Structures are given as structure tokens and as C-alpha cells.
Image (cartoon, rainbow, N blue to C red; front, side, top):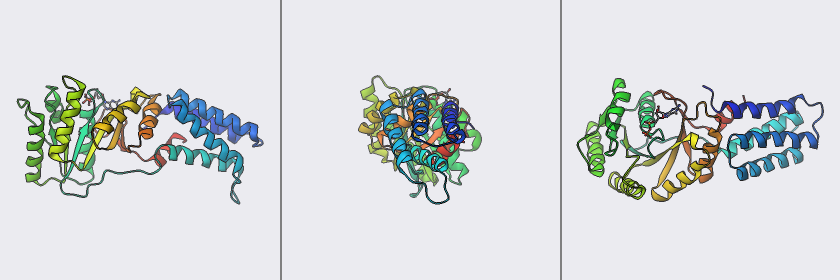
Length: 296
Ligand code: GDP
């Protein structure tokens, strides 16, 4: 599956320019770095972040001596690879399933792809051999419970919910207790994405979090919102102890780079990315693998 096609193509073109050149001199390095800059800015990555990143690449490319047996060109490609990987968070940070059950709480605003991501996540853990239960505590969107059931019951994953219940905190608590009794390995609690007002949403999240005491709170962010992702992630991070982030809709979006880098800039680890509408379109986010694929 191709992710961030356009960014990958333009980065590749920059590296091709390097590969084709007969001599690697300062002018060429600056030219290639400028192309990388343009590629990232066109993908909506924050300009200041782009400048920091490309300054590092340029400095290393101009100053470092390649190790024995490595050509100058190969070494510069390696620098680009390393700096992009560092930029995106360096190491993969998996969601750890240590406690039984491990309770995960997902939060995010309506339309971010939260419900779909909860379904994908439950399927992901199921495929990795865990027994999963999903709790729908979204009392604001009438269709949420049905949507979740439709998405994951065909896989034999149970959804706990009650469309009549208006108390989200009570629902979340009952759902977690229900699945604890059932002896599942992972409980995923989905919360509301909308409220009368934003303050109410944040307060409800805080109360649910305090009541069910999740091992990890996972924030879902729409990957097509570009640099706005920075403020959204920060706002949630201040309100709840966000343990990780899923960036959705990174398939086919030329501007996905913006959201991705904005989220990385908040310091909260991205653990998964959504790359399609289907239940299996969820990938663990591994900066190394991501950059390898981006650079082809
Ligand atoms: P919620 O309101 O946050 O729960 O959002 P939904 O889960 O209902 O998703 C909103 C829309 O985004 C739906 O049409 C989903 O199919 C779509 N969507 C969610 N994740 C992805 C993704 O990774 N890629 C694409 N292309 N669409 C997605």
C-alpha cells in the first residue's frame, strides 16, 4: 500500500539528482537539500521544522567524511534516511499488552476516524492472538454502537454498549467490568467525539479516564488536517494523559506529511497509522520502515 505517494516521489527525485550527478560538490548538495525542502513543504510539513531538518542534512552532507568503502553519494543518501527517521520519532513504539486485561481508552473528535480506528485496533490485537472486547461509551452519536457492531461482530469481537444509556461514565465502567469478567486480554473503550461543547467533551474524557484508569489513552487524529494536527494533539495532551496517537487517512493524501510531522512535534508517539477504510488498513508506525518505503 502506498502512503504519501507524492512526498515519496519528490524525495526520490531529489535523491536521483544526486545519483545522476558526475561530481558531488557543495553546489549539488545545496541543490538536493533545496529539493528535499520543497518536497516537504509541498507536503505541508511545518516550514520551521523543515528548515531545521534540512539544515542538519546539509551540514552533515557537507562536513562528514564517508567511512571507508562508502561513496560520498551513498553516504548522503544514508544521512537523508537517518535524519528523516529521527525526525519522525526514530524508533517504533508498540502498544504493550502486559497486564491482563490491558485497558485502552480512545479519544478524538468526531470525523477523525475514531470508530473505524477502534474497529481496526480490535482486529489488529485479535490477529496477534489476543481476545478483545470493545466498549462503546459514545452516548452522543446515536449510530456509534451499531457502527462498531457492524464493523467487528463479523470477526467475532464483542461490543458492549447500550444506546438507551445516557451516562457515558457509567457505560464505560460497566463495559470494562463486563469484559474483565469475561477474561479478555484487551479492552478498548471508545469515547464520544462530540458534546454540547468542547469543554464538556474534555471533562467527560477526564472522568472516564479517572473511572476506568486505562493503561493507555490513544488519541485519534485525522491525517488530512495538516498542520492543525499540532494544536489538536497539544490540546488533548494537556487535558488527558495521552499515551499514543493514531494518525488516520494517510492513504492517498498528498498532504499527510503535515499531520504526521505536526504530531511528532508534540512529542507524543505515533503508534499506528490508518491507511484505508477497511478493517485491516492499520499499520504499526515504525519511522525506519516508513522512511525506507517513502524513499523507495
Ligand atoms: P469518527 O466520527 O471519528 O468515529 O469517524 P469514522 O470512524 O466514522 O470515520 C469517518 C470517515 O473516515 C469514514 O468514512 C471512514 O471510512 C473514514 N476513514 C477512517 N479512517 C480512514 C483511513 O485510514 N483512510 C481512509 N481513506 N478513510 C478513513
